[in-house]
Length: 479
Image (tube, rainbow, N blue to C red):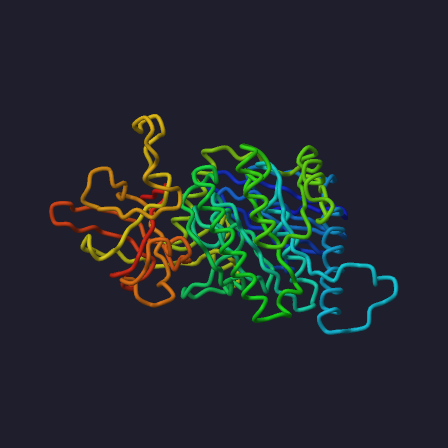
């Protein structure tokens, strides 16, 4: 690799790096074994990282890696990987017992008192504690066991976006290790028609639109979406009983750990009930661990796990840039330019460097698309209501938006296009059904022509969305 140097890592150490904006990094495993958040690195194959990626290369037995110069780098001997591996091993034993029970196999005498439930894991912790990284590590270890497990990974953090766009939460079965190359795709990449060598491109997520970064904006709405996801998991397992053996891992926003106690408790309980959680992992928060032990310890295994010293404190501006990366990637694909001195040819065709998409700009009549806003955004503050008056709009009521009205908020707004209703006829849809319809895609309103009652939208492909239903949130994006 041109313009590069080597680092030799001792066993059970990790090389941590952070990238500045517009910087990229190429890393190649020269000797030994190494992994990135649980995904094993292939030898002598360059891996490209970009878009302010912050990650770590860990080795259990020692290795030599070759790389270009990152923005910030260091090697740490203090990592939480041994405790994380112990958690994985405990969850793996639960899977084995669950499969044995499902197939009616004999149970060893030493395990007859053990539960035969598969692991249904909830990961909670404060902001910047490494919850998503832990979820990714545990998921990657499951699919690397060689047992054919396909665990479900659930993302309940709307500010992360998962496999869709910021503002969405969802779930997907995982069959192969999730790569790490850019924070625009923190949990891998959803299936697309673009030609690519990404193995993770097989991900087929089910996503719902919440529309905001913070759960406190509309806790009743996100609670309903969580219950919808739980029902989907239940239906999947009833149709395919063996699929449940691999279990699932639920990533949560920091609001599940800190903030308004009433909303937090309600969302935690809704999640535990919806997914029938039997293991709670608390990342680096002693007080929360004690609280959950008291509330759920009699029926659920509550385990405190350490926070990695490599976790980076992410500020608001960084998160805003990541949201822009995610939306740009959704419409235009992911392009990571090789670092100086390294050519695209030297990287090889398998390197995760480029997924180029061609979005489509289309002009629609205002009446071609039914656009709604859910709940709180439509409500006047309580102080503005007449004395004794009750709210006319609930937090989960769908209110139609007229693009011609001032203050519609549509210009540059991200709209979630909903899947057609079960009856197949949008005209027969009842308003509340909007809350229970998953997302089929996203568009952005790039221009409003009010005199001619037309709007221009940017879509990821040329398919028609005339007659479809869309929901607006609080996310905006412009090129």
